[in-house]
Image (cartoon, rainbow, N blue to C red; front, side):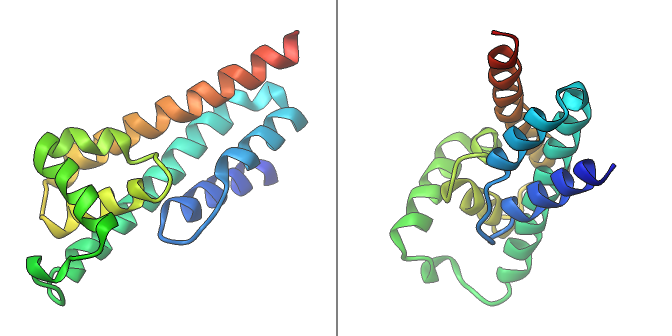
Amino acid sequence: MTSLWLMFSGAFFAATLLPGGSEVLLVGLLNQTPSSWLELLILASIGNTLGAITSYGLGRAGRLAKKPQDIQRRQYRYALAWIEKYGLWALLLSWLPIIGDLLCLLAGWLKMPIVPASLLMFIGKLLRYSVIVFLVMYMVEY
């Protein structure tokens, strides 16, 4: 039970603007308790998505403090270009290091609809963690 809580909280904090390595944590926990792979996968995906939604909310709140022309940093412009080009679909890449956090933040800042945004964030994160689980479980068997 402790490992499940650890996975959830680690994934949550890794998805906010705080640094964290939820993938390393997932690999460690899978090696410790491989029979819990499904629970770990689900909790990592949900925790990471909730962290991304927190970034979305910060972006939404930040809209009150920053105007569109205030975003001049290269990373913001890069993420903003992705969102402008692909719209909500860019949030499938919310799992990417650094740029993923910015995508979620900007989605909130641009007032994208929360339900489809959250769903796309969840799908992207679930796919990423599924690949990690598959690779670890495949390596454990061989």
